[in-house]
Image 1 (cartoon, one colour):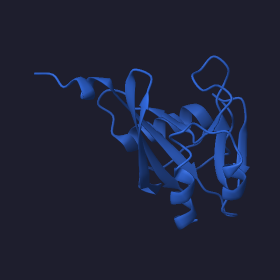
Image 2 (cartoon, rainbow, N blue to C red):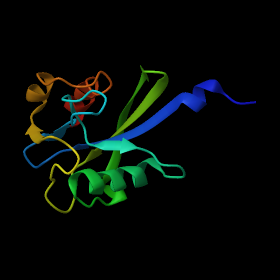
Image 3 (cartoon, rainbow, N blue to C red):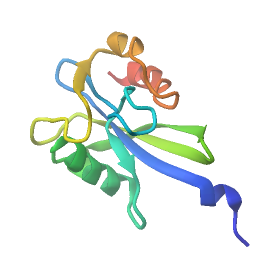
Image 4 (cartoon, rainbow, N blue to C red):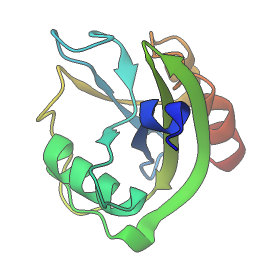
Amino acid sequence: MTNPVSERLFSVVAAALVDAQGRVLVQQRPPGKQMAGLWEFPGGKLESGETPEAALVRELAEELGIAVDPADLAPLTFASEPLGGKHLLLLLYLCRAWTGAPAALDAVALRWVTLDEMRALDMPPADRPFIAALQRVI
């Protein structure tokens, strides 16, 4: 018997990349994508058979051109939100170490922001609660 909820579950991983000044990297969604123009944490969908950490390492390489050791990804929090006809499960990892300089390879722009600056950005509903979790660890 199939579970209709699990068939609609949409799992996504994201990273809160934190620099030495305590700023967090956000990227702006490109035109043509759902929620275009909003600022979000970099990351993306899990592919079949991938662990969340492997998916995030892959996504950060594809989106930002950086290399991340899975050991440098610390699970921080998650969000669970209805999204269209699916249900989003968004896993946020904290990352303070990577190799390379982040570049906007799949986004309109990148910004390093403080948590106060982040509060003023237009963000997807699932990302906004992550600011409070980040406040506790930065």
